[in-house]
Length: 166
Image (cartoon, rainbow, N blue to C red):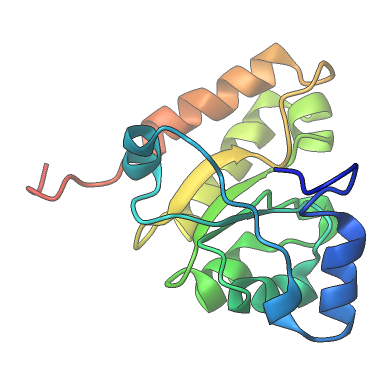
């Protein structure tokens, strides 16, 4: 979503300025325009989502205070500890990401991808509000076998119970 001219509503400079001034009410929010049926199925009640891969762990609390419903991406190399974020904020926001698209998906052995994916699901999924994804994107350096390992591990370990107990 863009404002007038060439200024991005969610520009890095505006977010950093608001964070530096410790003013969560000035952190710009981006309202995602997505088919309501799809959004409700993925993230019921989610209206505002923070998509900033550079906000840093120390600023997550302020971003959440600004009124977002979710945080994406959570990049391990940037210090975004999903277990800590889930523990501290998981009851207030949806969490997406955390499978490193740099080293892990591009260079690591398949077994390491499976292990990290399973561990991520184990710490982030309990209680709901988690969507596993790469830490940023699936870019051209990602090994297809590693991407497949992430997806297959998700299919094996990443199921939520249905409300009717199934």
